[in-house]
Amino acid sequence: MSQQKNMAAFASQRGLWLVRAYGGLTERNPWSMAFATCTGKGMLADAMSQSVIESKEEIDWHRNLVFGFYGGWYCGWFQHFLYNIVYTRMFGAETTVFIALC
Image 1: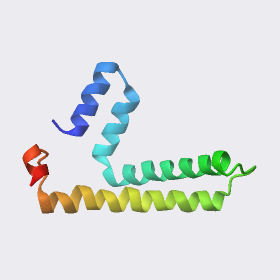
Image 2: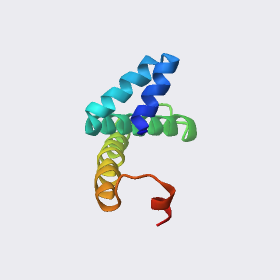
Image 3: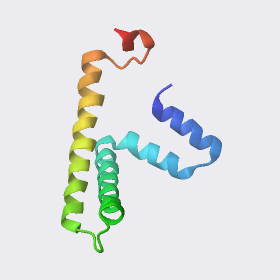
Image 4: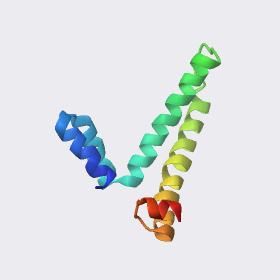
């Protein structure tokens, strides 16, 4: 069973409409959702780093946007392309132990 189907099955059992909505969006728009998710994660991580670790009074929004763009482009688009497209074409989409060990 695919990861999206597992997530959808979990969401329907628990009534988690947000998980179902997110799963549906990622199936319909994988590139946009990868960019949006990783941009948000990058911006959140940098904001936490600036406020908690560096103890800054104000967030440097230019730096925060740079981290967000890096997260969206590299972690979202590039890694989606590399892991889900290139590696799938090179090694196949099968996830058995035999494939992992070969």
